[in-house]
Each structure stands twice: as C-alpha cells, then as structure tokens.
Image 1 (cartoon, rainbow, N blue to C red):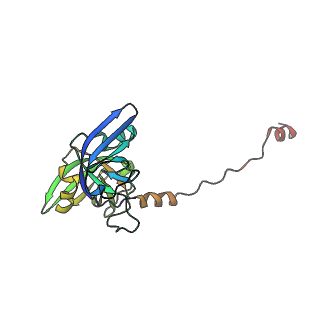
Image 2: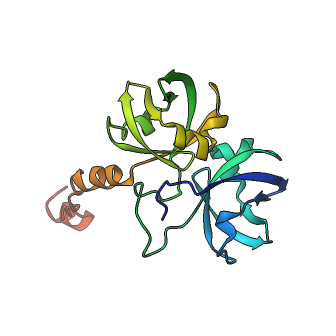
Image 3: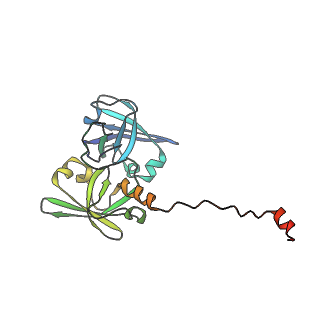
Amino acid sequence: MFTGIVEEIGTVRTVQRTGNSSFIEIQAKTVLEDVHDGDSIAVNGVCLTVTSFTGDSFRADVMNETLSRSSLGGLKSGSPVDLERAMAAGGRFGGHIVSGHIDGTGTITDIKKDGIAHWYTVSAPPEIMRYIVEKGSIAIDGISLTVAKVTDNSFSVSIIPHTAEKTVLSYKKAGDIVNLENDIVGKYIEKLMQPAEAPKQESGITLDFLAKNGF
C-alpha cells in the first residue's frame, strides 16, 4: 500500500522490451536508502517489484499488459518519474489509501495558472469518472490529490508550488497521458451496496415428473 506522497523524482535509464518480457531501470536516491530485492516501489503510481538494484538505480520487470494500459508505455531514457516506497507499518499516513493498481489513464486537457497555484484539468473515461467526487481523493501518476471540480467527462485539481516542484506534474503539458487511480473506498462501498444475488431455486420439474403426469 502507498499513500500518494511522492518521495522523489527518478529518471528512467532504460526501458527494454524483448518478446513477452520487459524491464525498466530507474535512477534514484531516496527510495534506495533501505531497498531490498522484492520491495514494492510505485513508479508514476504503478506498483512495481524491485528485481535488482545498485547504489544509484533499481530494475523492475514490467508486463507488456502494464506498459500498454498505463503511461509507462510512453517512457523512454531520460523520462522523469514519481517514486514512492510502500508505506511502512509505523509510517505517517499523509495522503490517502493508494494501492498502486491504476484504474486507467486520463489526458491533461488544460493547465491554468491561478496565483501561486496551477489548475490541471484531466479528461477521463466514464468508468473512472463515476468514482470521482468533488473534494474527494484521486491519485494522478501516484500523487495524492484533492478533486476541486468535476464535470461529466473531466475533473480538475489545484496544485500548490511545492507539489509541482516535487513531482512530475511540473514536466507535464496539455495532451500528456497520466495514470489514474480512484479512491478504493468508493469502489468497496459500491460493491457492498449492490444487492446480493438471490440463490437459484430448483423447480423440481424433471422428465420423470412430466411423464408421470401425462406430459
């Protein structure tokens, strides 16, 4: 589990696709301070497993499905990425519950300056928009953010300078694709509110029953 509080911006060194296997190597510093093989690190909001590491980088295997269904497929050498280690059991919970399993992608349609802040508007498909509510939480590229405005097919967030400086949002422009993860609480509530399927009743009508009754 993650919190959506990005720890550092890493830099992609290599993205390599070979048949059905792919891997990504990312230069980093903070997230490597206590890293071990098998640890989870969120890369632009996507939970990846560390398969090897050096003093200044780590490597993770990536399924081609993940590359095609997230913004990770557009990464190349030199791309900046948001990085966050999995939350420690005794750590502070500064953002919201983020699983690292994105629901899909959205497209930045507008970036507008508003005093010291910037408004980012993101369009998203209906299956993602249905869980987005004003003043609710959303993870954009792994960043825990508060939704400030919602329309039928888009939502907006207001970013303070600190957030922009410490995340990849400062590199984004209109037209860029971003990873989106809805607040998992909403999805659980929806599931629990759905009526349970009634057990199927056996009719008791068989071929023997029909024959005995003249059919």
